[in-house]
Image (cartoon, rainbow, N blue to C red; front, side):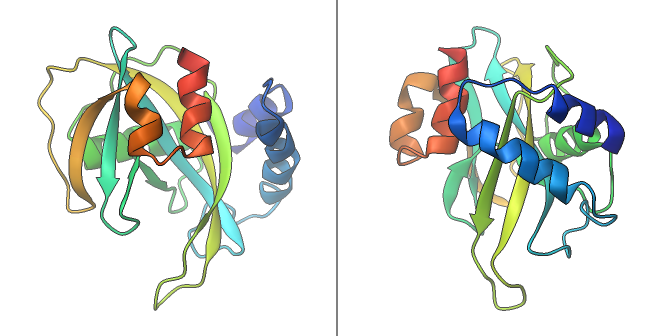
Length: 177
């Protein structure tokens, strides 16, 4: 999914969630910038992630992010790669050891804009996250990366508790329940 395909997907994006509807024009504005896929682009940049469910669609694979100290879906920076689906699949492999799982649809499953706290070497900024739905076998071996404290298959019914009722994550749960 290159830049133009992402723009087309966003222009056609349908959601009943008011947050997502409000994100669409913000994404389209960001994508007008040549370096929107670079992590150095401020105040924000495109990231790609994956909402990985098991074959029963009752569990989601989450990573306990080392820097943010939160349970999140695998994902990360594009670092100049304008194929955001490839970015999401790369991040899945790097953060979980899974090779690209089954991809039920090639269009975004969810979009989100969220703040990332400042670090000593970088200011607070926004991630414009494009999320894809993936399906994987819960029995496949996982490989913990240095970016995470833990990986876990979490029942969808327990995501609210583990994510401290994170609205962004709950929106993805709601789409599956």
